[in-house]
Length: 491
Image 1: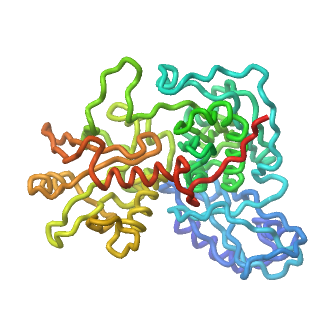
Image 2: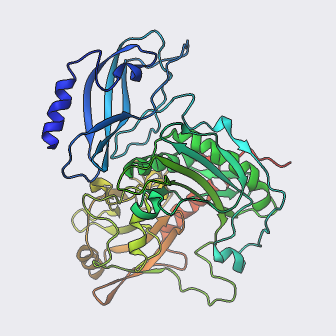
Image 3: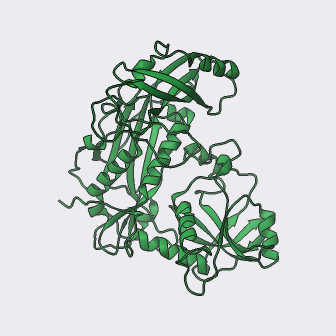
């Protein structure tokens, strides 16, 4: 059936003007367009028949003397329905004759397993400049650093961001409004079919007095990827970044005062499908929201608790699997997390520094992104970027008396780690993630025995170097392009 649908689409590509798709509307204002080719993106569908085709929101043509693309190729995401299921298509258009060129801006620049969409419709696209701000008249209590309230992880800031989307009207005006409950019908798609995704990021109060987000573009880009994976609406990731900056400009000064340098808030952007229809179909309505919560430093201990032993102890289990070949481990969706709660509460990335048995060189080893098993974590990517820049043999920034590392992204297994540990080739290991930051690992439990990992009080030499470099960027000890300054509203 899929082969038939593919052949049918190629056959339709010969039609230049009048097509069942209403292709002229895609070019904007009735201008003519050629359908060059169609790329299918199958999202977990094994067999289906094409029944209906509906375009996503597309670029709206407008007069413009500004810079335009150097070629006439435009990619637009479209939605096709297969009975009660849904699939995404990416149509490549070659515009042949339009006087009113569209203003085109890619939704994301981050490479990903998904084909990216282009959404620049001025009237229905996500637009941060239209944000409506309503400030609370009853500010919430701000707990002190490392208090029991902070460790409870449920003290949200005074406000939240909400943006509603409907299939008919697109993205509505964003709101920054007092924090409070969300309302949805019991039939909401997210409550039954896991049509939801989220992000995790932080805003930091630097030692220079400034508020910073750390590489927010990557989180916003990744949310677009995750949303597309569960057939939620696309949006311009840059607009979401602007909304988060505006949100932190409102709540940051009070919840992260300049008198508390070295503190942070955890930010949670999320999208949920919340239309009223019950059925296995793409949601006709969605809600994007952003909240911020006081979050503990997980390397410390709660008030009154016994000090933690240095380093984390990990459990290697083949029974509890959060990602699998052909799955969606690369997307930050709730369906990846709930079933894994029995074994762990987070999914940090594991890094191992060991000496190669053949080359005798030190390697920084971590799992690759191929196979869609591993989330392209922002901290993970930052560790790799800094390692390439400052710890590789070709680096001009290699610290004195430091043996260079070969940065390796490949698959490995526990038997390989166990063998390396027995041969004395394991040097150190650590986890990376927004929640855990950089945390050294002291042991891995595997088949009812422990594989011990060498470490000092705060991790190994390389772990401490990488952690310090990232910390300095996040808290403004050094100026870096990864730190995006929040223009604070201190009124």
